[in-house]
Image (cartoon, rainbow, N blue to C red; front, top):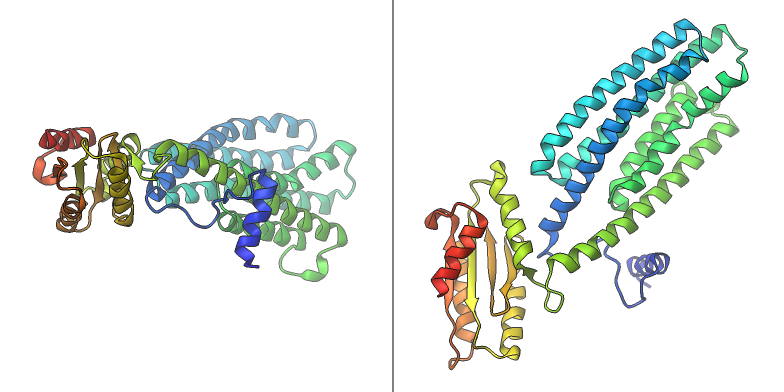
Length: 360
């Protein structure tokens, strides 16, 4: 059996999906991928933003707990680390707020890495403080031992937290391995395998298991998000983007200054007199024209067409006239093609309205 097909089947069972319903892990519909990626990036940034301000408040508050457990020299070091981590989280919060307006998977993933890196690095710093203190005070009371154990178990919380984010297996794995490697380095006091005891190996194993569970949970969450997104943005019967989804995609490119030079074109084919079989055939032709820059759209119940983001606009026009030529000649079909630059549209909705007026 194909290993990928086997994995799909097992995860479908695990997710409680019917056997004949594919779980989207590795392949997505090219007509919806840009919208889906933008929406997923926004979710990553919004969750990073929320966790950043929550941790920014909670991290320094723990100083009051450390005051009751540790002597002044340890307390000052831990407090310095906590305040520094809180400031870095505040900076990350501001970055997340700014970047969510032009979200991309690259920026969202980088901000997530920083969200996890800040507490991980603080945990490494705290371990070094405890090691120096234990060298001078080998005997610790019960409260101090409990606090040190909590500090040591923080990486488990970091990795398990990946389940909150809609990421695939391959996206979760680098973070899991990075945190596990950091813990291994601190436990081994440098890369000395001989210093790694049985308890340390067990902890590393737990980290990897929790990381795998978090990655799996994130993948299943991603699949659920994808299924819900597909139902919302695609025509349930025929597959192309609906009017609302097409306008959202246009708006995302319209607002992105990095993509401002890319032209946006709307092509409509009026099918108001076509019977259902002719309309279905024209929609199928539109889907066959889909690419990274051309998206099939069902603009309304009586019009279908294409949305072009950059690319060859003359080719887009040729495709639309090919659709018209293949339509039944005794029907009334009109083609409208408008371009952001040549038609001086001020918004995606205005661009679509210009095209609709040309059909009238």
